[in-house]
Length: 97
Image 1 (cartoon, one colour):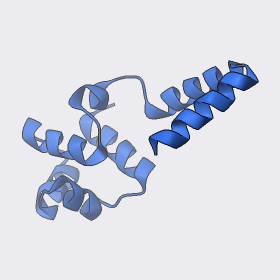
Image 2 (cartoon, one colour; image 1 turned 180 degrees about the vertical axis):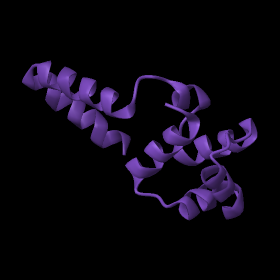
Image 3 (cartoon, one colour; image 1 turned 45 degrees about the horizontal axis):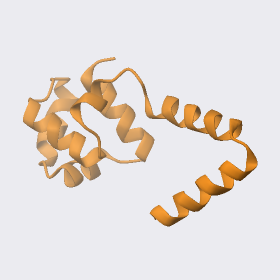
Image 4 (cartoon, rainbow, N blue to C red; image 1 turned 90 degrees about the horizontal axis):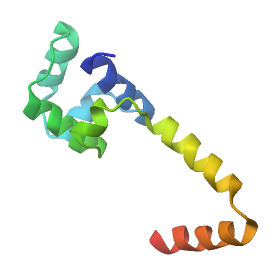
């Protein structure tokens, strides 16, 4: 997957428009429009701003392990827990919010 496809994947997961991403990343709309319309790879500083907007690191951006894979693993591990540990985990998660 190329960089622009990955940006689009993350953007679509969140339901963000290109303009909303520009606002969240504190980039101009023309910067992002140029990247998408010309299919040109962004500068590393631009990509870092985009990652910050998504709440991920550059390493996570380029990682082959996707968020959906992590979610699926988390669900599998939770289902395997005994009921008392599930209750304890739920209490911990509620306390974290």
